[in-house]
Amino acid sequence: MLRFLDAGESHGRCLIGIIEGLPAGLSIDEEKINFNLKRRQGGYGRGERMKIEQDQVEILSGLREGKTIGSPLILMIKNKDWENWSEKEYPPLTIPRPGHADFAGAIKYGFKDLRKVLERASARQTAMRVAIGSVAGILLEEFNINTYSDVLRIGPVKAHRITSFNPEVKAEINESPVFCLDGIASLGMCREIDRAREKGDTLGGIFEVIISGVPIGLGSYVQWDRRLDARLASALMSIPSVKAVEIGEGIEASKKKGSAVHDEIFVQEELKNNSSRYFRKSNRAGGLEGGVTNGEEVIIRAYLKPIPTLINPLCSIDFATKRETKATYQRSDICVVPAACVVGEEVAAWEIATAFLEKFGGDSLVEIKENYKNYRDRLQEL
Ligand SMILES: Cc1cc2nc3c(=O)[nH]c(=O)nc-3n(C[C@H](O)[C@H](O)[C@H](O)COP(=O)(O)O)c2cc1C
Image (cartoon, rainbow, N blue to C red; front, side):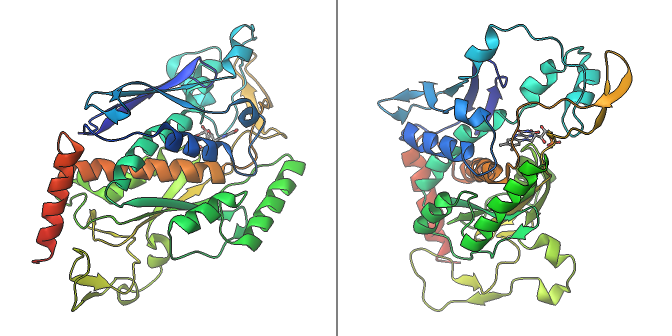
C-alpha cells in the first residue's frame, strides 16, 4: 500500500514527507522533483515569500545509488524564511482573517495566538504535496502514464481549452506566466491580476489536470471508498482554496440529456500496441465510469475561491478585546491558481499511482512491470 504523512509549519525549520510503499528499484531524480517545486513557486500573482524560498528537496532515507530500496523515503524541504522568524519575538495575533482557518482553528484548539493555527493551515504545506506527488509521477512515467495541467480561467478571463497533450505542449504551458496555453487569455489573466493588486483584492479561477496513458481498471465500484473519482475529488479538494471539483464534463452534463452526455463504445478492427479493442469518439466522462478508469484520459477540473488575505481587509473580531475590528493583512499572494494547478497535477499523480499499485503492485519495479505486461497482454483477448 502506498501512503504518506507530512509535517512542518510555514515558518518552521523545514517540511518533511514520509512515503511508504514504493517498490524497490525505482530511480529517483531529485531534479525532477525540484523542477516541479520551482513551477509551484512561479506563476504570475505570487507574493514576496516566493522570492525568499527557493525550494529544494533533500532525500534523507530510502535510496541507495539513486534507486529506492523498498524502505520509507523521507523528503525534506528547508524553509529559508525560518532564519528570519526564529529569532524574533512576536506579539500574539488575535484577529482572525475571514476565509482562513484562523477563527475555527483558534476556538477548536483553544489558542490565544492565531499563529499556532495559521502556521500549519498555511498553503506552504503544498510544497511537500508537490514533492510527494512528483515521486508518484516518476513511478507513473515508468508505465508511460503522463500528467499535465493548465489554467482555464482566472477571475473572469477564460482560456480556450486544449484537447491534445504531449511533452511539447507541457513545455509551452510552463512558459506561460499563468500556465495557460492560450496566449491571448494569458495576457488578459495577467492584466486582471494587476488590476486586482491595484484594488487590494484577490482572484480565483479554474485549473485542469489531465492524465494520459491510464489503463482500464484502476479504482473500483465495489466499495464507496475505492471509487477513483471520489478519491481524486477528495485529494483535489484538500488543496487550500479549492472549493469544487469536476470530473470530465460533470457540470455541463448536469444541464443536458443523457443522449448528449454518455460516450458511446465502438470496436476497432486492428489492434495497436496492446491497446484495447474498444474505443470511444468522445470523453465527456473524463476517463472514469463507476469509479473505474475506462482507458480514456482522466480529466479533472478544480475551482478555486479568491484567496482570503486582502490588502483592504474585511470585518472581523478581536479575540483579545471581544470587539469588532478589521482583519490584519499578512504578506500574501494575489492569485494562486497557477501555483495550485501544479499542486493539483502532483496530487492527482499520487492518487493514480496509489490505484495503479493496488492493481499491479509488487515489491520491486521489475515485478510490477511483469504484472502490468500480463494484464495488457490479456486485454488483447477481450
Ligand atoms: C499555492 C497556494 C498558495 C496560497 N497562498 C495564499 C496566500 O498567500 N494568502 C492567502 O490568503 N491564501 C493563500 N492560499 C489559500 C489559503 O491557504 C486558503 O484559502 C486557506 O488556508 C483556507 O482554506 P480553504 O480556502 O481551503 O478553506 C494559497 C493556496 C495555495 C494553493
